[in-house]
Image 1 (cartoon, protein in one colour):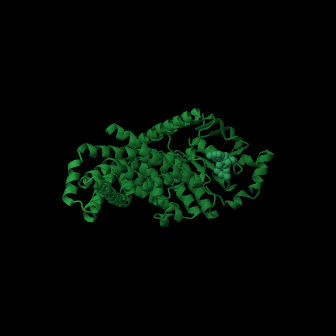
Image 2 (image 1 turned 90 degrees about the vertical axis):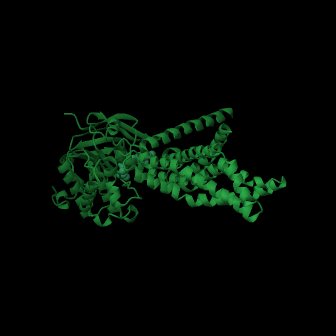
Image 3 (image 1 turned 135 degrees about the vertical axis):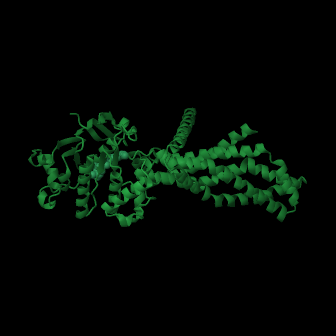
Length: 257
Length: 258
Ligand SMILES: Nc1ncnc2c1ncn2[C@@H]1O[C@H](COP(=O)(O)OP(=O)(O)OP(=O)(O)O)[C@@H](O)[C@H]1O
Ligand SMILES: [Mg+2]
């Protein structure tokens, strides 16, 4: 079976700096893939290429058998794949309230009526513990609250594909746990395909079907999280042990799912 | 030398082409938007309502000064009764459209360029794209349509207040007969003058707001610095460029109209 999202030989450079140098990655439909790697290695650049925000120098990205640029152009039609992106820096509209930020994609890109939107957004804000902040503006929110608003905006349209760029960075352990739980829960309910960038190792592995390690411009390892332990790659285990993978995952992450 | 000149001329032509496509894309995008009326109302507030005070004030002072200057020029020839004609025609044909456009650039255009520049740098424009919302139609479209509505109205306000200012200096302070002043105003202004002013205001409006929006929207491509300095550069360039283009376009249109 062909992968739902298929990346081949993806290259991207800025000036004389090669950031992506032949990335290959397959993502199955309705799975969660986590990309890990050092800061500044090109994880966000990879996501932006997939979102068609950056033009790669070489290589192909196919979503559901279609080139990504084409697929994004058809996104609003019934044949298109619905899609959302949670930015690392949130990219919220600072002149819109929390409520309006979350409601924006529903208002502008769907045919939902006012009452439906009101109800869906309120439910989302409640789930994200943001009901009290509905009328506040992004400038009046804490970093973690903004992250949750961005998460709400990404999930409100019930997209088929979601790219999360560090959805939990800067959240306290309890909120981090609930964000991961929410992603797992939404995946269960709506069966989206998710690509996740995270530094929250090992917690993020609990919700991942596949882990991809980006280093030196390529995916150096790709497999299920269980394979990470047995993996003989010294460089990867070096990275993981520095990321504190040494501690017991189950003790840290008291059994989700 | 000639080569550099040619190259910069070409790049200006190229850029004007890009700006026209940008403006057309925004206008077209606007009509595919949802909730157009609400968006248009906001944009009219931004361009029309918020610029009204400055346009009215500048209009009044322009009229006052013109009343004064023209009076002392005309009185030398014993022709001070022509004050109404001189004030009304120069305002309606030239100064009204030009100064209104310059004022709106200063008030709304610079703000628009920096706002769009910040939205670009903060990835808000990218975010719209990932949400399948057309950023041009959503952010720039309403402002361009509002321009089509607001510029002629603001220009008319400028003209009227300016003519009234000419009356204040000419008839109230100096000694042009009020009846003569107003009579000359009504007699000398023809429908063609008003039309010409109207065309100018529409062209200036589309030109300036497109340039300002284009500069801000493309901060990441056009500015020579990233970040805040890039945004401030975009805003300055937007104001300078649109002002220059207003005067250049004014010359062109006037030569066609006369
Ligand atoms: N628009 C750009 N112009 C120039 N260089 C860029 C641009 N975007 C990213 N880079 C460079 O590409 C490299 C990868 O950046 P990227 O943001 O993808 O890192 P990352 O893996 O997401 O890191 P982090 O975990 O800190 O978010 C960096 O060296 C960065 O300097
Ligand atoms: Mg990143």
